[in-house]
Length: 462
Image (cartoon, rainbow, N blue to C red; front, side):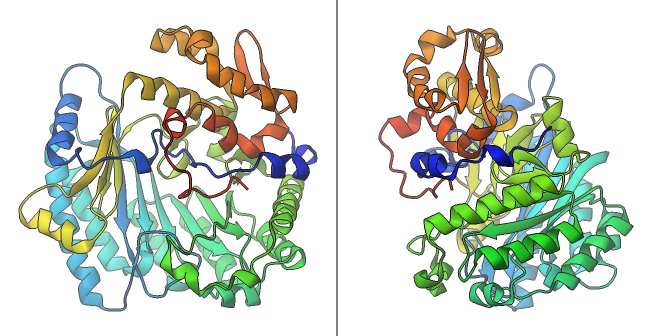
């Protein structure tokens, strides 16, 4: 795939920039309702166990604990150094693992698993090995599966990556955000280039197939010059993948962000320059723009899957895994079984109370309608492949695409007029210059947004 940095038009992107979902799911999580609880979840699981060929299972395990707070963070986390609290959590997580696995008997084959947080490496190697062992006793873990873990380089001890590899993990994502010392102090996350580079090298030596670095643009005290220096350091480390996120300052929703001085944040025009510089540098360094803030080396599985039309999108972002059911384990974890989404309780007390009663800790969810399913298919194809085959959607969902999406196709004309996409008899194709506002393009197909639901909880596209 060719570099696309010359197609980035800051003025056009600024004009089309607006708040909207990231579409790791459709409908998005803010549409979930509390009428969907444990009984609904059990019904969805029972449906999966009847009839024809079953989709593979994936696991998402949420480990919410952190030793320190990062001021930019919008994750569901618990900051503590009390080891008894985190140990108690593992005990209850084990109960949920047992309850969940029982629902999917006799076929509990798992093709992929992701440990997120919080900071999964808050736990030491022995605790993580115990957790993975417990999962393996209740689920049938594929020997050639994709098993990934989020890592804070500041928490690593010697030999951690080899121990994780021995547990079966083969992909890692390391939080970096920025290498500039002033920016790191402003976001309360200090770590050196040397520590990150050493961690990446240790992961590769241990046999990890892919290593990702997370970066954020738009952080306090970040300038074009300092960010350019960060990008140069990332290029030297040369991770397989890079996630480049837009910092969304929403202090009314996320309390830690109140400790960031708004006067230290770069202006919106400066943020666009930061993004443009990143696109230029990473493209020149040989990275492929996957979409939605993600870059990968051409030989990485993510880039290969996109070229082959196999790329998928789920609650963890872009994925090379085939479409599958997902079991969410832990507080706030989100799952997807059949045509349903569900989310666990967000607080420890409610989570523990349910498990004390031998109940699944499902707080809310949604059962997708036929309309939701067809719109999800269109949105995810746009997000993953930047194109949609009209004929394929019509055949899969038995609709007349042009009449079903008459209003949506009309909304897309503004993007067509700006040469950001093309509409012809058989395809919707997003052009390189339109890929940077793919969220805005997808929003045309979001019926829930059109029904008047507020967008104030969403971040801007750029």
